[in-house]
Length: 197
Image 1 (cartoon, rainbow, N blue to C red):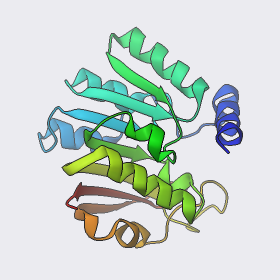
Image 2 (tube, one colour):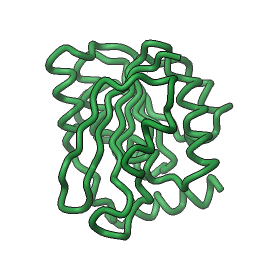
Image 3 (cartoon, rainbow, N blue to C red):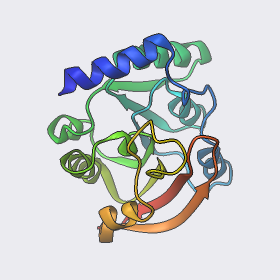
């Protein structure tokens, strides 16, 4: 499964079939950092791609780690980080592999711009949650961006149902903020949550 998934994402990054791949950090992340709501800490970007958010966090004083299944994406991320003089840590891992992910240690902040909503419904999303619970400390912040399922274009990642995140993350995560963001592709949901259990 890992090889098949990594080959798919490697091909996407090799051919430039990555419309989401921006050299800019996510606007909502920037707002939370610049306003001081989230302060420098040990942070993990799940499915970091070419590293825009990881590099931004590193330049703001975070111990910034990025994880991705694609070696091609990570190579591009490392080159970007080096060009900007940003000290980042990159890991070629499948976030569904709880045992391997647990070796990264504990983080105060975890972010996800597009990993969870790309996974098939069912066991893969359960494994994702198991890994998240393994590495995010209680009281840690979690930021996630997800396309809404079936809204707009029918192709692309499976996405999430309107209230799926609230259901699946349940009582272990307190909802701090939820925003619906209109995009030309699909409606996007942004969540800021805190692990409480």
